[in-house]
Length: 130
Image (tube, rainbow, N blue to C red; front, side, top):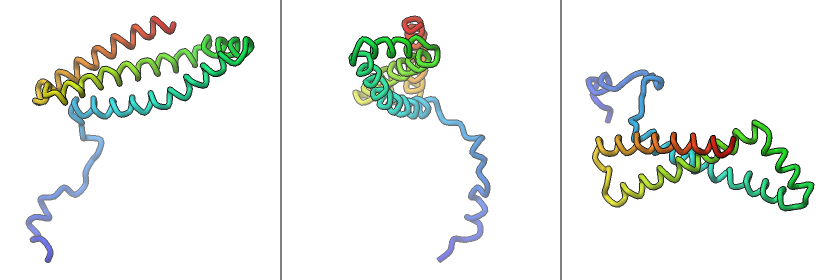
């Protein structure tokens, strides 16, 4: 049995996906997952770099020369920023599991605070790396 014609006309015909805007809480949750993936991949990069540096004095020199370059330093800064966001976002999610920040206003405020804390930690990581 098909639906009446009246119901079909109420449905959107063409959705413009560029007009959709996620709420800040959804953006914070998605970025938490992305930062987790980045952190997971970064473990392999960091373990390879550690292995290279511990292999021999020549390997240490090679690892030092790699880290001394701008591109790898930028990647290390990105890894530290992703790790910082993942930790801050994880603490936010743990607080929500305990019953805090479950309302729309407090959830949006906690997402904004987590972005601000991550920005500060990212600046500190930049100072540490450079």
